[in-house]
Length: 166
Image 1 (cartoon, helix red, strand yellow):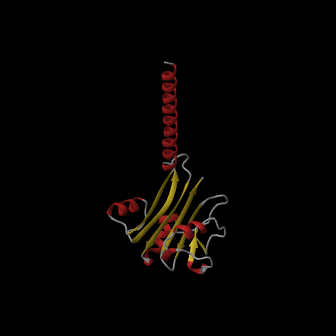
Image 2 (spheres, rainbow, N blue to C red):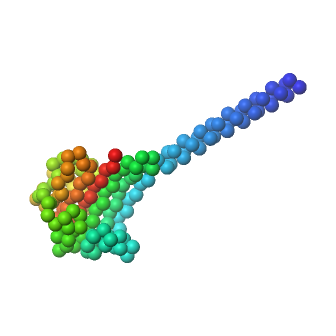
Image 3 (cartoon, rainbow, N blue to C red):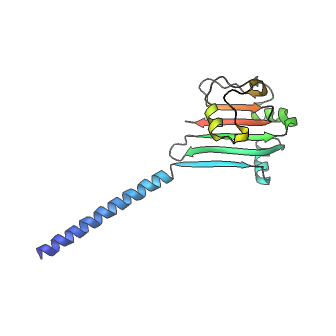
């Protein structure tokens, strides 16, 4: 009888040990798989996207929308890069939609916090190189400490909006 109780205790103990390990593994997998949402789209705008763009004041002449980013489900930290390719004749309307018709400065932002987003996430045909011709760019001034940048490449008719949330 003692031997039977010992074996039964061992079986129950091993069962509990396996159950605890399995539960721990499930929690680890759940935590790792739901930590961050990622997105990466590069499409011409469909009718639903055009409705959203119109609601946001973006001109209808947008021919391509690139959205790349990530967002933490835990605390909301994240980053996103949005690129709008548009008809070059709509530059004034794009400037107005993205931040106002005035206040834009020539060249690229002087801080370099935005560069890695474009280097790492933009499609190859829309990347801004390490030594670009700054005369083809305009940008909205970024307040000190801000992690938001809006840049327009006038030559390529593409706008870049970089947002980093901490």
